Length: 356
Image 1: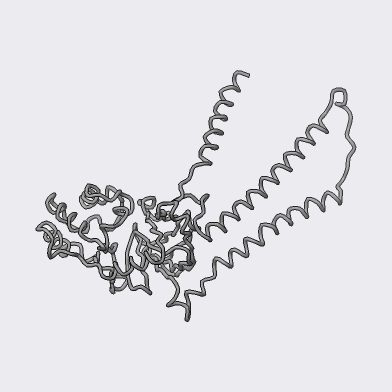
Image 2: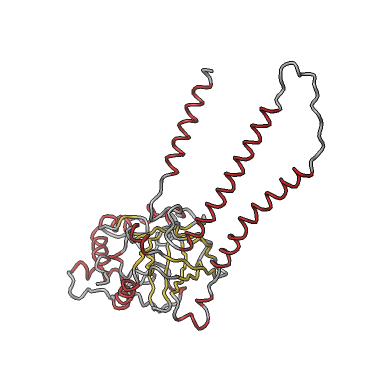
């Protein structure tokens, strides 16, 4: 008995931890707090399948306990052979029909939701110009977001309007990645040879609960910095989104009236960074030429490189050693070593890239 006591303590501890973790979740990240129509449908399917599985487990457990207790071997009956029964058509029908019914209950809404979530006809043909479309391009290890109808390009921070369908064209520039906003909808792969399409809807009330920010992830192992391939989603009202688009279209680096360090930073950027990056959202270059994140409105972004808190210290740390924060990223080794003075100048210039 004493030998079992430590094991039961460990089991109790793990049970308590599991119960505690089951209640964890943030509205900007948790799939258990759906923040849109797609996420709600997927959550309903998850609940339905869980209920079915739990019911099956309960029924099977009850039958198992009943059989063990009812037909256990009793003292004095060791030599008695129970009556042998070969099959029961009634039981066979029951345990064949019930699983079929359970599968039908699960299959019907699953198929219906699958076709509904795959309906992207609004982003094709005559409706294309009126639909909210975003071209997502996954790169190692950053994200580009192009708004073809609005004629702007940005990166790392995905900005979307709430309470309407947002359609996505998903593709990759190097290896397979996977686009996933856990709180808003299930993931979908981005491939180099085919464009995947789907839609999401961002609920305004849920967005308000999440502080207007959702977290996005890469859900496909793509290299050493896969776990660091994050992006942020800013969910805005339609008026706020329209204002953001206009700000992006007119945003230009304000260097003329800036101090000497900002001007020096711009000159350094123009010599060593502009070949890959851009600082204006209306970027007409072909995709092949866009080898690094578009930095228009960089100073207003939530994160540095998608993973670091946005502050001057982290910008300098990233410029000094990007490989330390994202191993295998394409920025590493593309420019010579920067002096502390040059890093300070570049940082000040990047912080001048504001929308207003």
